[in-house]
Length: 519
Image (cartoon, rainbow, N blue to C red; front, side, top):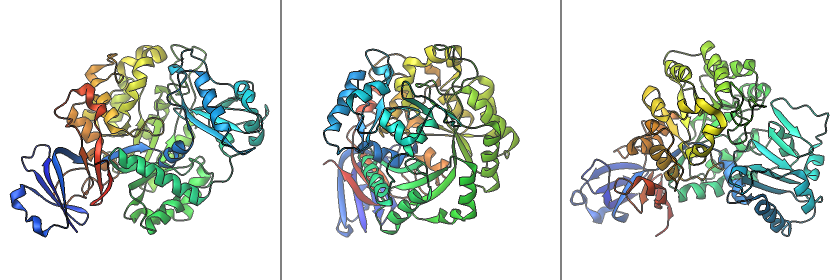
């Protein structure tokens, strides 16, 4: 199959045509260099900019699909807005069916209050309800959901907390409610993957690094089989690097005993590093800080694991040459994680272990990250919200945090959306990485830590490929690279930085074939 893209803009090239043979970029040149009669397909890009397909190096693909199917609460401006959406959904449900929603953020409400169990019980006590905050680290449940989860005042949950009066559940305690859901089937998971894939294509994402093993199921076998079946059926339309998250050590040990690493070599689905969620989120005040929160002196947040647990997973990443990546938002959690890497690391970080989010940092911590060459999985899109709250939340340590430029020049980074926490719109993240401000506002936060436009684009393309050991086969518009390509309606190199979030992807080419087009 020969496909010729004509009248294209390719960064740092004067050439205006690109030839795809089967699934690879065969040649970049001038239109006059090609015999159009030999082509199976010609795509006229009409002078538009093309980029490599985006690589979102941290999202939750199955979670994104489930989010699209749930009540979406991200636009709610008050608790009443949240409750009204629940009431609207109630009319579509048979008695006893779960009502699931996600996306509320109390900091976006006209009054900074949380939804509560009592509010949800006033709507219904016949349906279990769970509404998760945008970050995924705190949720509110009604009485029916708590009853089905069999959570009582005597229930003990390591790495989590809950309040039966308010119905608020934090961190690992949310899993107790999740485990009361009706059993998820492989077919459910496959549908969520495909729904999320379409959403990714719409935003020009052709590769993802996801962690799905414990998103909706207790048993990692189900999401693993869902991916493998989609691949075998020819229905997997993304390159997926699965970050292997396990709640307990015994789950990882079972994974190894069953020799699950044999699945590493599929064409579109590969197993990646061990993934550990170390602490919570800044917005929920569950990220583990080394000192009490500046705006709530009663808490320092929480970790989901002990120091011994972190040591175990870092060591296992080395022993099995998988690498270990750890979600760490608060600097208190980062202290513990860096202590583990103090004990278990190799000089060149050959397994490309790393830190996910790595938001709140002190200078000496940044020096250690550089020393161990830990890969930083940043989410520059978080600047949109966090720049409004970070100084109030954490005080002076905000002056050394969200250090994207420092990390870029001292180690390696890649970028991601953390969807469904944020939309899978890479141009939001690109703009925030450069402007260091909320979109549509001028609340500039630490401009010295800004990335350049090219660095920001690279963080979603070739740098993401590096994170998954695929930098030699994808992430750049070069001859011999995989033909994952996007066509844009506006040129990011020619518009104002504050307009980058308005760019639309009008065509997504995956593995040499068009999988999305708005034309």
